[in-house]
Length: 110
Image (cartoon, rainbow, N blue to C red; front, side, top):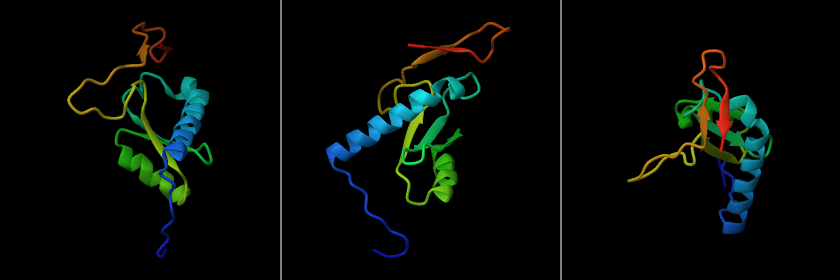
């Protein structure tokens, strides 16, 4: 390997572990990030450090995070939805934000 390349384990077991670690981090920060301003944005999590970035564009969040963690294991989620992207389907929400003027950024989770 050269030029800063590094190997990534893409075995099913490794990917399952990555998914579980990322979901655990997301669950810990969910109440801080899943609000009206962020619903629909992409969160990219470095599962090794727990650091994350949020952006409308996943590539931008990934670039900022990769600059801080060049060899981190990055994992992306769409905030408030069950998937980042869909082909031939519909994104399903996992939360609904309050419409009340007194609580514009409060979301409930399913």
